[in-house]
Length: 608
Image (cartoon, rainbow, N blue to C red):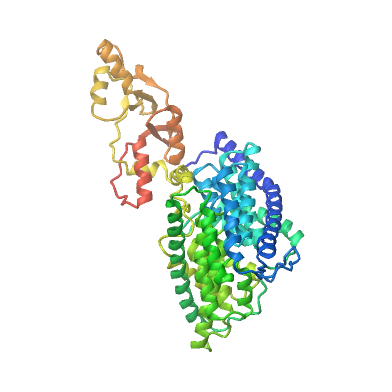
């Protein structure tokens, strides 16, 4: 069967798409630079805020991760525990006023806002959002709020990408790519994890195993660029400093399986508690400006009794990795972190939930590792190793991101020796995840997002041919009309079939055109049957298709001519003969059968 060459229109579309994709890759470079500088500014501002609120005002100096040092010298202020009640409350007052006065979409954990913009808002983010998000998140977290840096920097990077694309007048698809590439850049830089940042933005969009694969290359570019920009200021070391861990026996997967079950159940409980508290704050009969202050006060109450439960908590993880924290304290911090995060962010404060999730998972993993080491010392040689694996498993289950999380934790800790148990635990925890995830704006799969409905329909049709669709058509095709029959015979012929178009053949059965039934019927209604008119007098030229053509192209032809039917021709010995009529209903039915897997065993229909 002869396949025709690509049309000039199709070639032009391919060239245009090629140019646009390369243009996006080039524009990813400045987006990565801008996002990297945004990470530098945010990190500096956050460190300054924690120095002001926690150190100078409360005398509290929480330890940090091994790979980061404070940019400011510690003060001489003595630790005043009751100030931990006041400082988060003050931070909540400032953050609440700022967010709900200037940019309400900057409240919460940021990542959901970026997901919502991608799926439902044509990747549009207001220009004021990055600035408001930086200041409000800096105040919320810096004053002791339990929040992560990824949510703010994700929204900040996404906003930079969106605004950059908008200023350049790019289309919606290009704007979506640059927006999520900006998000990747922020994540990859602030967590010292460029590879994971590239994958995270493509994976976080969907709750099931699915990705936006077209984001991977531009996101990799922006993430690497942003990481290099950030590291020029703060160094190329990992976020955490870990001892050398060893995985030496397959039997060690047994206790790791128990860890996977624990973190999966805990992640589901964490998500339910977070949104239950969020919903309670939504119902509070007070102005939203005040709610972050109430959340800050509740966070401060927990911090008064357990200071390790506030702020980022990364220092606790570093101590756990060094084997310096007891099982009881780790468990207490994990529980406290669940509630302080819900109070700080669920009340309307600004901050991320990835960081607290990592701390909760690491603390749970460390406590489980210490418990299992007492029970099975031979199978658990390094209890701190469970901190690393717990970090990965907990967030993989809570956020439905098993791939990027494993890589991110490995990059953050520099511990690739535990890659196998981390993959094992993350996979099991993902499979056991609860019904409610940590990100409400995640869509189940690419099939469910509004932005891909047309793409999937078009993609499925591009895999179906006219020939196979015509074979399984449920509509009997009309017999070709001989060009010499009278108008009365033509009307009797048309009455036998429910079609609007009838192919006409000459004396040698060659196709010469179609008769549009409404034209004939309109003439009969106005002037009656005219015996001197023949079928050939009603013939019109119409676009035709061939058996090898794809249904997406057929649908385009129908749209161009504003018709619901096209004639299918076959070429035999240099002549074009009528094979049948393909209708829009046939195309839709073929699409449904391909999607839902119906039995396509109908008898062959068509005229040759």
